[in-house]
Amino acid sequence: MPGTGHGELPLSGFAVLTMPGRLRDIEARHPALRGAKSPMQTIRGTTSSTADGAEGARPGPGRDLAPLLAGAATAVGGFGAALALAGSDSPLRGPLTLFYLLAAPAAAIAAALRGLEPFGRTIAALAGSVVVNMLVAQGMLALHSWSVRGGIVAVTAISGVLLLLVLLRRPRGRTTTRQGI
Image (cartoon, rainbow, N blue to C red; front, side):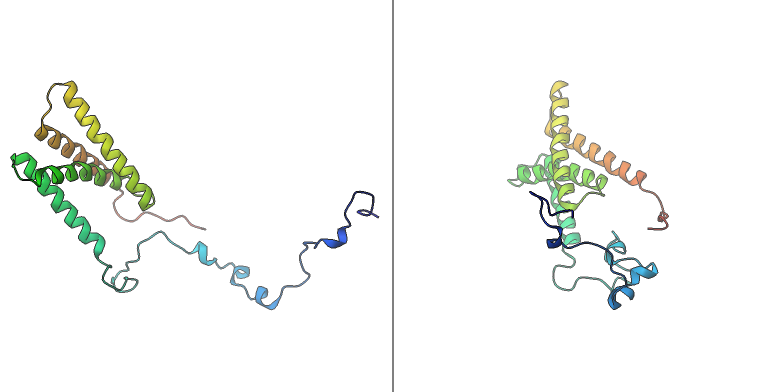
């Protein structure tokens, strides 16, 4: 008899994984047996907004926080760039200009990396922003043409070109979905 020799374990202690002869009631009524998709197959990667915008909106005070913060960051960055370009002696010139120099390329790079998760996109955009600023500084120093105004103009131009490329790359209208998924 197999499994009863010396040094072998008897097989009677193990459960045999075989298909039962007949389905239980709950298994027989399962929608997947009729070809329905499971809940995980129906999850879409779209936003929670609908055509009328009322259904799926988050209730509470934080529902419109992201657009508000984006607008405030744009205003602060624009004000910092304006202070630097105007040559103002304001104590806010340094921090707001630094914010602009980090935020403008980061926003352009984040727009290009739309498919990533938010945390990964933020880290990659900030790292790319530092790289853009370093390359502008190195280029201007190598050409012996360093100036604060020139650096801001160069970073603005690079960020604008990146945003323009992202907008030109995106398809117009709806894309077709894959069938059978």
